[in-house]
Length: 268
Ligand SMILES: [Ca+2]
Image (cartoon, rainbow, N blue to C red; front, top):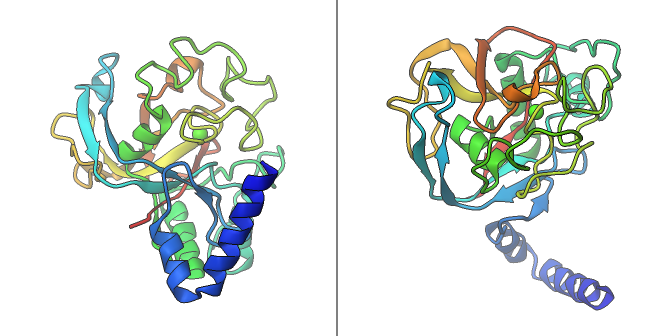
C-alpha cells in the first residue's frame, strides 16, 4: 500500500507538472467507483458506471411495470444526502434563501430536511455556480439504478429489511428522526442512506405508474409536474416503504420534515 501510495503521489506530481492538459485529462478519466469533490466543502460524489437494469417491481401499481432502462454514460451522484452543514453554507453565501428547521435533532452531518423540490434546485444552482460544473437532481431512473447498485432484491443488502442497514421506523438505530448521513454501510456503488433517513427528491414529475416511462435514464418531465417524485422512503417509514423500488410524491413546494435530496452531475 505504501508503494502504491508513493506511486500515486509521483503520478499526481507528474500530472500537476503537465498543467492544464493534465487537469482536463484527469476530469476525462474519472472512472466508475472514483470518489471526488469539486471543492473542499462540496458534496462528496461517486462515479456510477454505465449499464442497464430493471426498474420498478411487480409489488405495487406505482412501481409497475418493471422495465429495462439503459444508462449509456457513467454519471456522478452524491454519496450522501445533502447535509445541513452543506445547506447552511449555501444559506450563508446567499445562494439559498431558506434556513429549514432541524426538528431539534441537530444540523452538521444530518441530512438537510424540511426542503421542497424547488429549494433543492436553489442549492443545485448555487453549487453549479460555485464549482463551474452543472449539478442537477438525479433522474428517478438514475436514482434507482444507483440505489440498487446491481442488485435485484427488494433492498440492496438482500431480501429482508433486517436491522442495522438503514434509518427507518423499524430497521434503524432507534434514535428518533434522522441519523447523521453515512451512519450505515454504503451500497455496492458507495452510496449511503439511499434507503431511509431523508426521503430524496428526484427530477421527475409524478406519474402513477411506469407505463410510458423513458428507458434511457432520462427524467420523465411530463405527467403531473405539480407533484415531484421522492425516493427511498425516510426515517418515518416502515421497512416496506424504504426498498429500492419504493416511490412517493409531494407537491413540489412542500417543506416536509422527512424530505431532503442528493445531487448528481454529468461527468462527460
Ligand atoms: Ca435517503
